Image 1: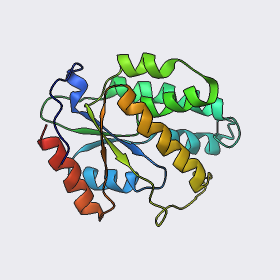
Image 2: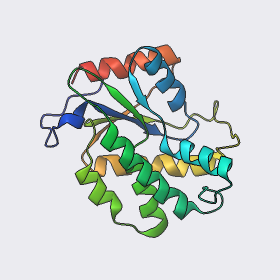
Image 3: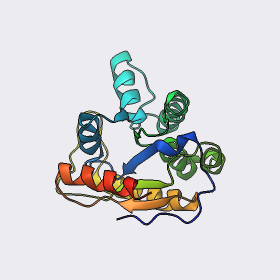
Image 4: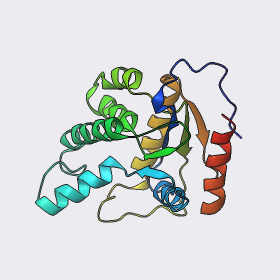
Amino acid sequence: MVPKSNVNKYSSSMSRCVVITGCSGAGKSTLLSELQRRGHTVIKEPGRRIVQEEMRTGGRALPWLDMSAFLHRVVEMALIDYAAAQCAEGRWVFFDRSIIDAAAALQALEGSLLLAQLGESHRYHPCVFLAPPWPDIYVKDAERRHNIDAALEEFDRLERAYPSLGYEVALLPRICIRERADFVLQALAAW
């Protein structure tokens, strides 16, 4: 179980918006599908949506062609998702990644200062669920072309970024999807 923070200096209407993030190919999307099946609202990963759109339209803002352009598009889409989210009391809304993910990647790539700025102005629930590397289930596909080493670098970056912004991180256990969803919901109920 995840301990409840003594003080939440960022209480707001967005405190019902929960981030599921972590290593690529570690079961985040499967977990979010299970949470959606249980009736929760899920905001799909901006990066995947951009890759699909760019591939469909012949665009170049793809991580394997122009990482900087891709990440800037991800930030833009994540900001739109954040503004549109209806995270009212009594209802959980789960985000497949967040603004923080793209801002942390931009900081690593370009030295961008967006991470601190957006991390302060766009808050989510104080507990973030982080999917650790799970090499046994990691697969590449048409939209995920990077290897496990790049996924591990991404995980390390996120494992540092969220706590640096005042979030508590709960590592998702490597268990069946039903139990993983139960873990998330039980941890949130303890808040």
